[in-house]
Length: 147
Image (cartoon, rainbow, N blue to C red; front, side):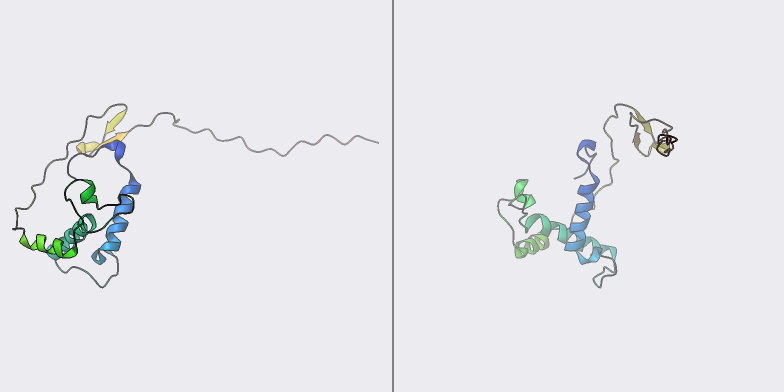
C-alpha cells in the first residue's frame, strides 16, 4: 500500500509480525544464512516472489482464504505453478516513480521536527518534573513502659 498511512491503525506489533513472517518465508532476509542475493536485482525478484506467494498461494488461518481472495483480487487459491506462469507472462514494466508522502492534517498538540521530517505528538497528562516518593522511615514503636 502506498500513500499516507492512517495513524490510528498503525502499530509496531503489526510491522514486527510482518518482518518475522518475511524472514521465515525468504531465507535471503535472514542473518548469517547461506541463501543470499549477490545483486540487488536478484534480491528484489526473490522478495517480490515471496510476497506474491504469501498473498496468492497460502491460505491464512485467521482469514480462511488467501489475502488476495479476501481483498477480491482473485477468485480462487493459486498454485505455485500458476504464480510462476503469471510472473513469466507479465511484460517488464516501468520502475515505480517515487512520490512524496503527504501526511494528513495534524490536530491537537503537535510539534514539527526540524526540516519538515515529520511530526511529534505531545501527550498531555504528565508533569515535566516527576515528584519523588518520600523517603521510607522506620516504623515507630511505642516506648517501652518502665517497670
